[in-house]
Length: 241
Length: 241
Image 1 (cartoon, rainbow over the protein chains, first blue to last red):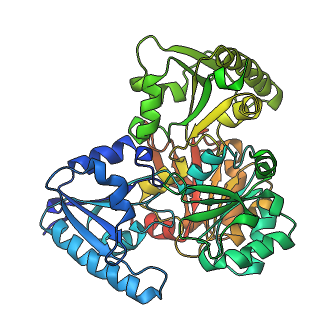
Image 2 (cartoon, chains in turn orange, purple):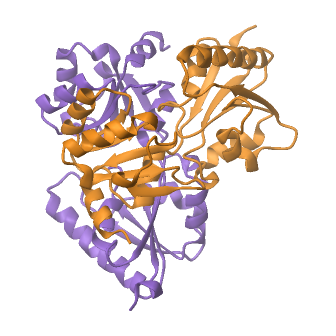
Image 3 (cartoon, each protein chain N blue to C red):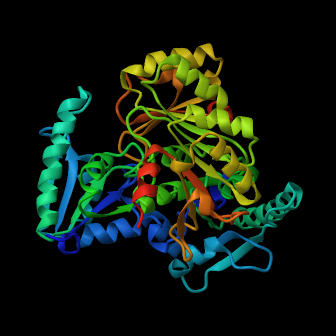
């Protein structure tokens, strides 16, 4: 079958969690979708589906890709293999597929795993989304970077020396994927004398959202959390009520 | 007048330029606004206003803050001083003000200059927007970072040694604010042997959008342009039609 007769795979960024932080374009494409796909925890509720729920038309078919979380990489890859195969079947039959993805699809997003498996064979269009980083800085009213300042995004599983070097080089950093690394990262920030600039943000824009001084962050941290390390956080932490 | 009786200042991220990449929340707030403000070039058209034009209700009043571009910092600061004074007057009289801002308000966004001048005196709510970085990677179908990879945002005016150190430390970088620095940055990337991974993106999601190998980028580069430096760009550049 030619690529032209196949369907298009849409990778849709839904933003950080608040259903109102979906873009107009994403809302239009989701509302028009006949077939959507999304990642979901095994047997659990998909956050992506939950964000988009109010936009789905009646009768839209759904493919839930059940991805084991926080485990070895192999089972997750197998889940994406199987999900990609189901999506490829629909695309090959000429059907468009709208893949729902929290945040931005190509910035640590689950869509990247489908993109890697399908973009050589099928037409793909990606709709960017608001990142949890932008949402966190907005919620805190905390400017990230201006003028010639450098911002770095750092996954917490990096070792201390890599984190320290990156923190020293940047004017502002966001540390993501905290989980069981929270304690170690917190100790590193304390050692660098930067705790007064460290804001912990959990579940931004969702139910249960919390903004806390890093000292008060839970250990381990939940999946949807990050640390913002910026000069401005100093003021934020001093003046919070 | 008490803070409670004053109006609220909304800092609204409009995304990278495509009016459909505005969020539902931004669209709602803009549509309900009685008074909007935005940056504009002296005597010229405001991009922020242009993005939001279709959402503005009839009769909405407008404050254009005419900000001189690409000049010394002092005149721009004076323009924001004057704009902030006009906005403060409206807020003090109990009126809400919706400030329109391209991209994300707190990531190199013009809203930061108003936030700095007004957030101590008035209630401020920031609505995050899609960044031009997310839009550029979406348009190119180019994953930025996955798993434990590091992403850095680098303003091109940084000197070569700072840029080089940051490029070596990160798995992917976006180089912003290119302008007259394009030639120097391009030479640096060539020296580092990374030209094959460098994608130039101009006016993403707007009329006149272009994606080019860095070698073909114009010098000087226009204001709305960036370089994406990632492993994936290698494949993109080899397979582009």
